[in-house]
Amino acid sequence: MPRKKTAQQAGTEPSTQPVKKFKSDSSNSVKDEAVNRRSLRTRSQDENKVGGSLLTGVTKTPPKHMNEVGSSRPKRNALQVTEEKIGARETRLAVKTPSKQSILTSESQTFCPLEASVQVTPCDLSERKDKETETENLRKRKVKVSPRAEDKKARIMAAKIHHSPSSQSVEIDVNNPIASSSMKNCSVKLNSEPCLVMPAYTTAFDEEKLNGATVGQKGLPRQIPDMKQDPLFNRPVVKLISDDCVESGETFTLLTYNILAECARVQSDYSYTDNIHLGIDYRSCRIMEEIKHFDCDIVCLQEVDVDYYNKSLAKMLEMLGYDGTFLKRRGTKYPEGEATFYKTSKFRSKSHHTFCYTDLAHRDIEKVEHEDEVKNLLKCHVEREAVLLVSILTDRQSDRDIVIGNTHIAWTKFIDLALPCMQACYAMKIMDKLSNHGELPFSLCGDFNTRSTDPGYQATSEGYLNDHSIRELQKLDTIILPDGSKNSLVNLLWHAFQHPVRDIKSAYLAVQGNEPELTSVNYVMRAAVDYIWGSQLKTLAVTKVNTLHHYMPNIIYPSDHVSLQVTYSF
Image (cartoon, rainbow, N blue to C red; front, side):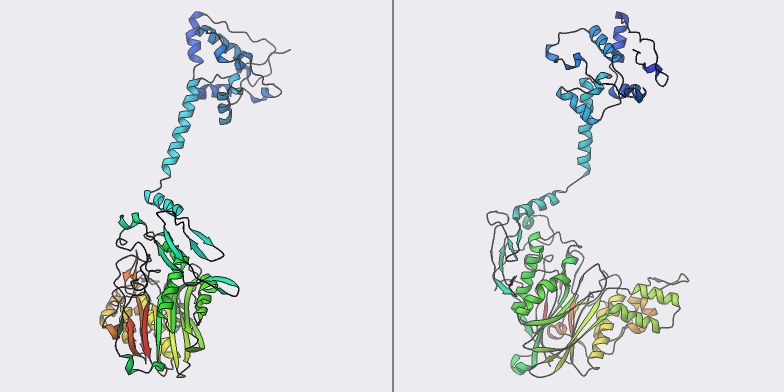
């Protein structure tokens, strides 16, 4: 039977000559022992030079000395150990470096093919284990979780919030001291489906957040006060004209409210608010409580989710005696829009009209005398998703018509002041046209994303830009023309920054003498941007806005805006 070829004869024809065994002497024992103690990696590379074709048909049988229990083996000197290792190498073929699984199996006294050619010493195994442990620790250190995130996750798990499909309510573990709360739900069936209407919450506020480092949240109550002390409802009414001077049939009330759409909430930073008070269930119930409390004849809402309107909002307001319509904003980033509701006992609907400010601007751009390249640049610059919803309602008692406009003007972070100004003027032009140029009274309300010191507010109230506003808008030369020069939107589209309404008045300015100090408070805004404008209407009273000290939404306010209410007479 031919002998197996040695490592020196790898890659040639198998040799018929026997392999000579190495006879060690005392002079070479120390050197041989050092050679055989090389690292696992070096010896594996040497052995892998042997052709892999010799492995075919070879039965890998562990040697007898490999199956012996180490504890029963007699003590041997260094020379005997070296001779046994060399003998094992001559009777076995070299194999490829094993996988990690093969290394692990050698620890449990099972046979590993690597041991037939390369002796795995305890030092090698220890070194491999240390390297794996170090790699795992390094991987863990790369994934850093902030203490705030860990605390937030622990609080959420502790609260154990569940959504019950049978009652559509929020269940909170009352045995947990962190999330201890009491909650009374009131359900009303609508078309054989349960619908949550007015639950009364007394949810505990996170103690650690209350006393922690969260800016703008210190001082909030730990639970909702009762109705008489709740800031959401306890808002004084400022009257300009006594109710005795006006007949009750000639008055109506209007509410405007940006309720913070869920699609906008999840894409913004509201980490300062506890998750319990950010959920749509909690916020929706507080919003419905507020609408029911003020009981206005007309309700104009902004940032209304499409699904929320179809599945919940329209049904709940229908039970309160309202009917209405909805207009979705352009685009797909924010599937939300504006909704206008009216009490069916007070008004009946005559017609509804929808407008997009982008279409209105494109129509004006086509009329100006500019080159096609300049027109295309202007069209791209004014491209926004903002819309205007106009409803013409008829008062059932007096049979008078009134035009109600509901809008949410583009948010430009107070950087581009020209675009909100232009859209506000477009809204006024539409209201003037649908009111037959002053024959019908109208009210335009919503979120204008414009401060009272901005050119947009001045142009809305006066119908044109004064010198100061013109200079402010001309500074915004952000449009780069084809010849490389820069120009402003107000210079290129001048006639879009004016409207024909001259008797327009702000409801809060007419009653209080000033606009509310703040109507929105969050990480990116701290300003008054919500307004109610009226024409051919007498402003009787407004509901005062309380001083806002904390970021919203929070345990008290369900949105990052507050609602505004006004009482008008024809």
